[in-house]
Length: 416
Image (cartoon, rainbow, N blue to C red; front, side, top):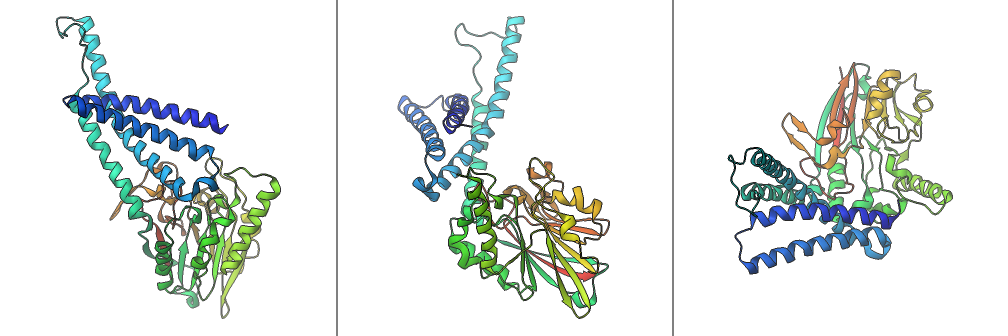
């Protein structure tokens, strides 16, 4: 879509939403003085103009011209401001439905409802105030999610018992990171503290399950000296996620896109990580072997690409007592792994981020992403096969997290 057309569409939507919400604001502040009323109008429509200006410069100016910081501020502002306004809309719609019903009743039975000529049926001040009051709740939660939640790294420990695990691998500690999305980071010091949390766990081996960047390999330039500290005695093994291929931006040529992917692969090597591209490696202790299988992105949802080849990666693992699979998208588990590769003991995935929004209190776990992904966060089991979905280390789009915190996973293997 042409960018000017996109800006026009988004600006029109902003004006429609704001016009409708402003009717509620007028009703809620109807008793204000003339001076206060003018300030409210100026402030409200001034912020609307600022929002449209933000949409324009975000989409029309080159990213390198306006800078990553300003782009982040614009995105945060628009996301928080309009999510909050959307909360108001149901209350205004319900009130308009009430007014419509009353109008029809008045027309059909004039004696039932008496309305002064020229006044009409007024909007409810109470409903408008309730809607505006509730809109403040997500606004402040979303601010908190940026200020605190984005870097409130949570270490989650799980013990998984496998029936075929050799005694020599009992107690193996696996660290998992996923969805770093380095192009979204804005606080390097906070990211360093998160990485140090993983290092402090002193795990035996580390898995990274994809989406190192948002789009381009150079997003990692300023974070190489942070993530090159992610090391473990038995190594760090990684795979690619859907964002790593550069599929979501326009390239000057096919060659430029191909080169970007090659640069990203080289980045894994420079970090000291072994990138698995539809292949496997064996970990050996004495005569015992377990396989680490890593495939390229393979998604069963929407239009996510299927670059991965389980057939290629799995071939040659027959002698391994246990098979551990790194596959970015959790939808791969139900669609192929549990159907055709029943000897895969655990699949490690990420991708969903837990939508960066939800509720996790004790056994209560909810996020809107559950309506798209059956397995979206945590540990799942089916017929002696396990899946662990990491909630992600970074963030994408909204630069924060509310309820679903960034995760460092520690899984200890035990014998069933």
